[in-house]
Amino acid sequence: MLTAKQLLGLDNSHLQRQGDLLLEGNALASLNRMQQRALADGIRLTVASAHRSFDSQLAIWNAKANGQRVLRDKQHQPIDYDSLSKSQLVDAILIWSALPGASRHHWGTDVDLFDSSAIARSELQMVAGEYQQGGPCFPLSEWLQQNAADFGFYRPYRSQSNGVQPEPWHYSYAPIATQCLNGCDLSALNKVIKDANITLQDEVLAKLEHIRKHYVLQVDQPPW
Picture 1 (cartoon, rainbow, N blue to C red):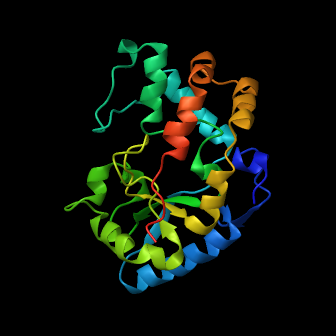
Picture 2: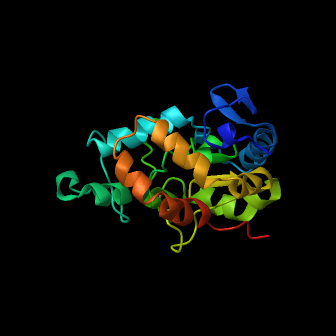
């Protein structure tokens, strides 16, 4: 089981490095096997994003909260930053970006995947259309739906009932991630947010319990 600091993205000592990747050891080994199987089937399964530290997630959050990165609605359309109250801004960020300390990417069990033989990383936008019929990563999406479970991976954001919108690129290594989810503690998250230089801190703290329930705990479970 991960420590509180590891769950919050403050300590990565439990992770293994492979090139630019940092992942939990079992997840990394299983990912490698899945990549080999995919390659044999003509798909170059590539990781766009894996482990993210608290500070990395904080940088994403603050850039969006300060209007330095585009905010998008549930249909991926840009949102007018200036039209939102501070509380609405928190909700808008959470549609596609996790709160620092509450991201599954902290754990080293979750990866964002694409087919690098079908689209260059520099061109990838991470939008649903890229993974739907006619999109460059549609064959990968179909392949993952049929094969990912063989390697312990599944989609935690696949239904509209979650706080986070469906992400066909986001896969989680269930044997470890399920344990991590059970360890997510509200008091520890509250403390790290209070101690952080995070934009919209007061607004986040005011709705932190809701954020934890709706965006962290309310996810799809492994389908097996």
